[in-house]
Length: 170
Image (cartoon, rainbow, N blue to C red; front, top):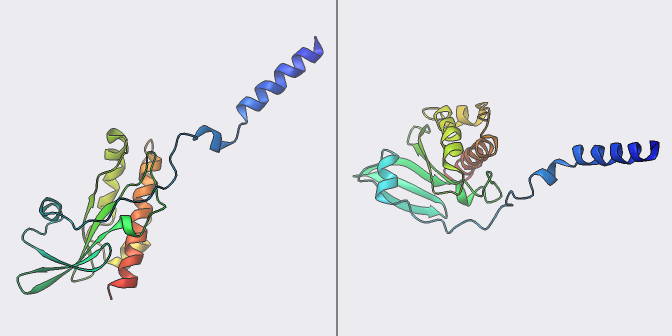
């Protein structure tokens, strides 16, 4: 009887202490990002860039102009954060950095996250809007409780995109 109790105890202990990675076996690993395409008119309008012209300066980075005025840059995070995944895969963003080097707007692109969770995590985008690139890079943004994977992916995407801006848009 004592041996049976010991076996049951050990079996329960093994089940309750399984490694964390075993609990997330269905989470995807980073996948090859979709082809980074030029932002369309609807996306530009959502970024506040109606009637803007784009000129690709590097894959995932476009110089923005309206009329004869340079307005800044639009960056697609998919090019710079290929290994970043939320709960169900990649979570790309468009980031518009205006001519005064401020994060003017951010836009989530199509992803496979559960909408109810992603919408909660997406509220994080306001934490960077209006900040200079330097301030935005230093911003401490915490994940939204209950949408941690999506939140972490958004945070990592923004950081990678700001790094790319500093590297390629000077």
